[in-house]
Length: 272
Image (cartoon, rainbow, N blue to C red; front, side, top):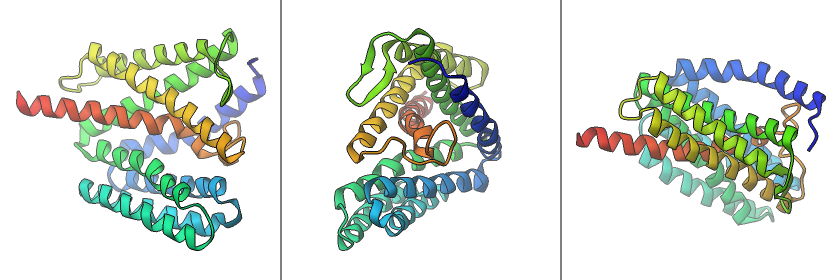
């Protein structure tokens, strides 16, 4: 995959526009961060509906968005278990609604679960403790963005054998290795720089490596989903990236891994 200056310029411009809002909301936390996640969930819901139910994407998108928003708000008020239950029932309700409109039950219900897990976990991670929640959320973004950017740049410059040509013909093994390395370094740097309790630089690197692997996996998984639905991009919201789902597909998987790491650290801290 040759490096295209126009693609780089579009990606950079998109990042300059979108990143400040995400950074400021993450820094502020609380209702601001919840609003960011809710807005993202709604946009993702409609992108998913456009892929899985292109003929009735508005009504299906509304059903998916409602299920996600209810679960996110429940998580924001501290009811994580309830949020997970609501997500499951919301997936069922959205799927049954789609069925009454002649659309796929499984595709619609899967969209709620696919998008809902990372949204709930992001809220949990940021709201867990004021300072620690900020640090762990920053770690998620740092690892996922580093892995994504370096995978693209290394793959573009170095090229070489394709990683999974059936579903993602542009991704290479060199980019994959570059992304893993970047995520590991970012995790170690964040853990070494920030006061994250038992998570030191070494274990931060291990967690960063695992989260970077999840980031690469999330990117590949979304590529497979787009092939299944016969679309090139999830949407056209972000120049140079396609849709919002094309931008956060890896982050969605990374937050699951980092949340698991945070849970392990919490359990160890309580046992100490």
